Image (tube, rainbow, N blue to C red; front, side):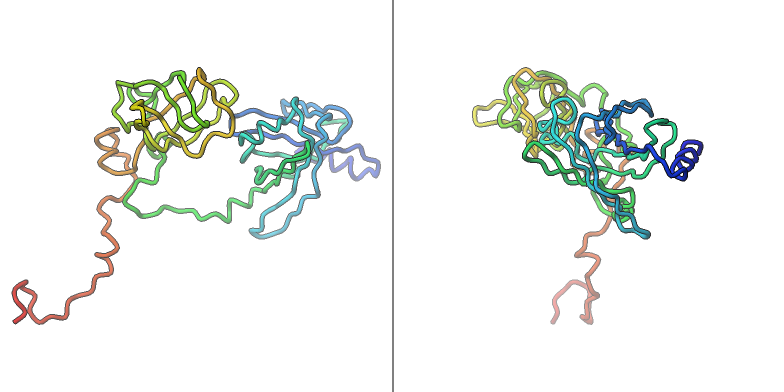
Length: 295
């Protein structure tokens, strides 16, 4: 690649003008650029800012399946990385790409790390983010599990159900919110009680915009009002009037897939799989197996 070759030529010259730059892409698509150079750099459609105080330790790499590992450290800033965003989980599992770049000619650069943000620690006006390399995914178990419930996620490529169809999604403003966990969205007369249980709630505006959580319960509270309870609670404040969208839930059973979603053709479970008790049963040793008296 021309950029890599140009950087290698520059490094071989003995007099270098290099810096490191990081691009962070959150799961909601928001991108940030940082550099340890004393001036901003611009490439890859992103401005890499120099006023963030971000730095990183040396990258540890090895052959085999061991995880490439490093750590990024920086100051918390309302302009770049806000403490509230970290606390809300907006940077969890964000994608990170790190470059070694010639700041005098940013076209001469190469990627030195690509991975995701792992654990984030914060305090005293600063943060420490563990960066995990791509080889981490090779240590995760993969493959299809043979089980009665459907392993697909409602609406994903395996399930193929369109949640935007009428009757399976509700969007509206919360009339009240308790502990960022219990939402009163009105009586929802068009939807049966429990229709949204095991579904998902996503906040559309306000301080918690973009955050989501699984719906634990769709039922009535002590006063008889219908409420949507999520788990775990959102890590940002949701106020009355903030708009949310909730999707219908699925309990992964074939009956639900067929009757509630009319999607049995895409059911990914094995409903006729024998129970464990049946699979471990042993043949009887009785001489007569007619079911009558043993005398």
